Length: 258
Image (cartoon, rainbow, N blue to C red):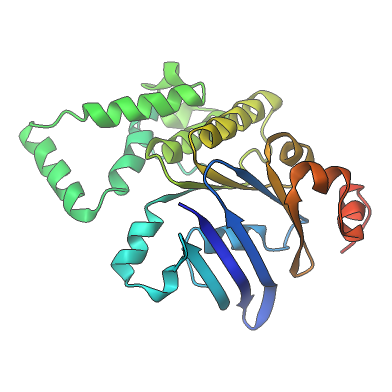
């Protein structure tokens, strides 16, 4: 699935966060969004995740304006998009159960009901869900902790479980909001490797990050949000080595722009 925003403006209480932003995420590519805090990176991810409509402009899945279809149609698109937040938000259960939970809630409601009824009568053992959960945990290097209580994990391990939970249901697009914020180098490296694994599986990935070195390492394309504009969107190598916009050069160099 190709996910895009076209000429999108978004405002809160009449104050625009950003204006006239256009961005397309194709299958099998990583797009990094960089920019200072408060510039709207997380807001743009929320629009891409279909959590809320833009103030103006279009959000499209395969060319279809998702805010111009029925709620059930929009929900079907939303189920094809995964998002990992800065906070892992795991519940008190095993690591595997946390990942399996993501698989269950992504099912349409009638499938969830059938699943729960089957569990009650003992005719479904969850083998397929367990297999997919364990496979996703292996991608993030936590296969040996599947039975461990999630609340006993370190912050970095918890974030890796959150990534596995999103990866397990095989989304078409994966949105990551500062996925390695405050993590140690080991956990950061594992998540970056998992991002590249997702890309190799044909998943389109958007990463909002303050870490420009990370963006340079993993992104195919990079977008720069400054002020209320997406001032640059190009191949990551071009953005970091030979940006078209002087403001991009100054931002990457660490000069105060805004």
